[in-house]
Length: 112
Image 1 (cartoon, rainbow, N blue to C red):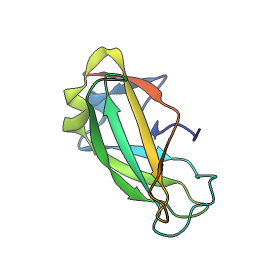
Image 2 (cartoon, helix red, strand yellow):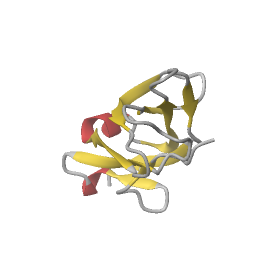
Image 3 (cartoon, rainbow, N blue to C red):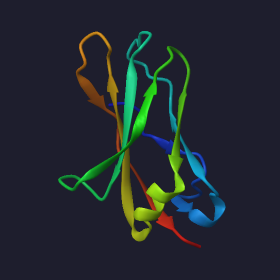
C-alpha cells in the first residue's frame, strides 16, 4: 500500500474549518512505485467503504517529489461531522492505467 493522503491543516486528526479560508492542502507523499512522467494520483473523500466517495481531484506525480492538491473548503464543509471521514488516493501508472490505492486516513471535519 501507499502512504496515506495528508491534509496539511489537520491537527491531531481534526480539520477545523475555521482555520481554512478557501482551500486546504492535500499532500501525497513521494510515491515509491517507480513513477514515470505523466503518472497521476486521483484523490477521494467519503464516509466509508461502500459509500459514495467524492473525487477531490487529480494531480500529476513527479518522480521523487511529493505532490499537492488544493481541496476547496466547500467540499470539506459537506463532510463536516463528528464522525471520521475517509481520505485516500489511487496512484495511476500512465503506462497501464491500473490504479493502486493508498492506505486510507481518517479526519474529523469540524466547524469550530
